[in-house]
Every structure is written in C-alpha cells, then in structure tokens.
Amino acid sequence: MTRSIRRGATVAAIVAISGSVAAAPAAAHVLVDRVEPAGGSETSVVLAFEHGCEGDPTVELELTVPPGVEARATEEPDGWRAHIHGDVISWTGPPIADGDRAEFVLTAHITGQPGDVFLFPTHQRCEGGSSYHWAEADPSAPEPAPSFIGTSATVTPPPAAGNAGASRSQAVTAAIVLAVATAAIGACARPVRR
Ligand SMILES: [Cu+2]
Image (cartoon, rainbow, N blue to C red; front, side, top):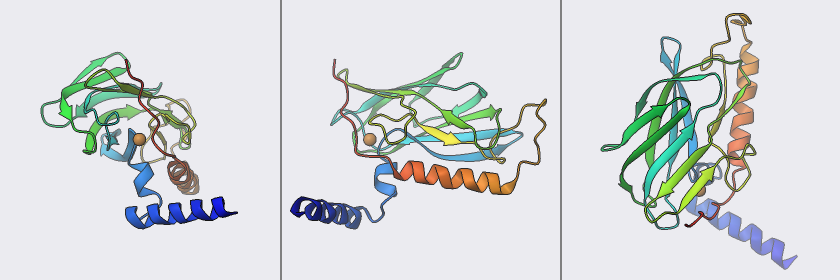
C-alpha cells in the first residue's frame, strides 16, 4: 500500500517536471518523431534522439529500412554524413553530447497499406564503444525499434492492390494506435559497453 502510494507520487512528480505524460519518454530513445508527406509520392520520416549512452556522446546511427521503403534522400545534423548501402543507412559525424537533441530525416518512397507497421531497427553508437540496438518490435520493450504506422497520406499502396480510397477512419485509427504505443514507452535501457 505504502509502496504503491509512493510510486504514484513519483509518477506525479515526473509528470509535473516534464509537463506531459507522453512527451518525456517519447522523446528519449531513438524514435520516429514524425512522418510527413514530402510531395511526389515521397514521405519524410524524421528520427530523433535526446540522449547518448549514459554520458557518452553519439557518433553513429545505423538504420535498416524495412521492405517497401525506398530511400531517396537524407538530412542530418551539421557535419554529419549519410552512407546508403542497400537497405542500410549509416550516419556518422562529430559527437552529439548526451542530452542534446538531434534529428535525422529519411525521405523515401514507401509502399504499403494504411495500418502497416514500419520498423527501423537502429544501432546508436557512442564515443568510447558503448551502444544501443533499438530493434525490438514491442514499443514498450527496453530497446524498441523506431517505428510508425502507415496512413493514406504517408504510404502508397502497391499498383496491383490499387487501394487508393483507403478510408479516412482507418488512418485515424492508425494514428490513435501509434499515439498509444508511443505513450507506453518506458525508461531508457542501459547501453551495451565494449
Ligand atoms: Cu532512451
């Protein structure tokens, strides 16, 4: 009883400090921050992180794109470079301090149906050799993969399926599911140290 009351108080304190329930944990790991139509049947997937590896700065992100995602362009922080080899995109650059926010943009043609889940397993490597492997499908797992759920605005159905009239309600449902999944993300896992 005492324990549950204390836990409730701690959660309340965290919420008070962060200002919102969803924002604090959702911004912590390497995540898909937002997905935006980019015109010409392309979509921009914006990945972001707000921490390195327990004090060590980030020096590399290596992302594997799922089937249906055809990379067309990238954007990265100043001084960083993207290298695309098949379905693997690696970004390297000058150290980004633990606690600093950074964004990486993958613009791609994405083939799929509204409601499809797209997972982007990602290695986050830090100076000194520690790393995270954000790769699990379960968004509440210790190291969830960055992911998003396709909507009619962000994915293109394959020509054969021709499901151009995907219902709006389907897309709205997907957005709600994504919001719930994002809010379920827990505390940061510990990085692997080599
Ligand atoms: Cu985290």
